[in-house]
Length: 338
Ligand code: PAP
Image (tube, rainbow, N blue to C red; front, side, top):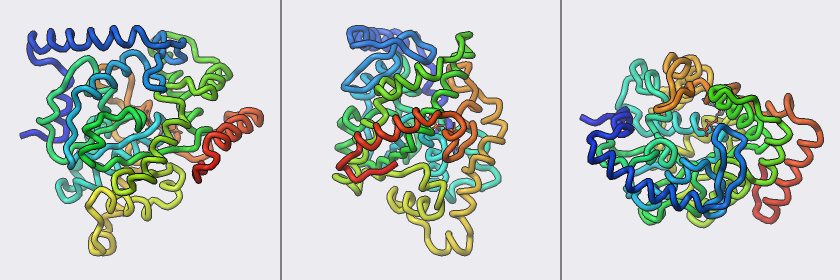
């Protein structure tokens, strides 16, 4: 019977025919991507390309094209969207544990043995990476992650009305987290660390993976105002400050609110928050030593400090002023503060 780790089976082609079919399909995507505007990348690949106003590594852009053409949403799907380094791993774990509560004992929970990135796999990065997977084999509800901008989401996702939870984070912490992450990836590819100022300049210009950061955030912010029953907009900092309130909001939004017995007598809200805490997840064997499917990158790369305001330890006053000013200008008139 399929379980939530079945996604691992989707990451390998079963037959020679399947492999050939995928090769033909992706050859077409590669051609499209090769004709897109490009900029040199600050991560490990050579270039990032611009598609529908957003910047992607070539391989991720092929994934976006495949998702747009092939992904068929179910109304029961739960989509976890974000710009990278905004708290994706955390929110994936929280939503998975909340929605599947009662299905697994807490002392033998899938999150103790599997990374949140397999339980709620990324569409364009993991599942549609050089293949068209049969997602119908996954148990319901299906959990998917994505960094695709709201305006580029596949139409079937919008039409299905499935819940989309977006998490955003202060761009100063996003930049610092991304800078560390990219240096880890470059280290694995035997490349020297990126110059912090160069990376900063690119980020400010919007030339960052799945960016411009501000356009990603605004797209989901506007959608959450226009379709509040379909798009929930969360902030990493608010989740850190008041996790109980926000976890209950999430549960309500995805259609499985906590009963007062679950909350008060069984202490389930607190138990889920403990299970998904940075301290708990980052100390599990799977997250300390496991590797990202199909990559030499360790899961530990997704757990660094998990704090609000670490930017104070890295950014100069000029950098802070510049990022604050861009954020102020970009969000002016939209009623959004980060
Ligand atoms: P992704 O979008 O690339 O999948 P994402 O999980 O958003 O990654 O980014 C990792 C950040 O979330 C790290 O932030 P930091 O570099 O500032 O430390 C990571 O530490 C943080 N993070 C991961 N898990 C948790 C958690 N359980 N609670 C709070 N923060 C977390």
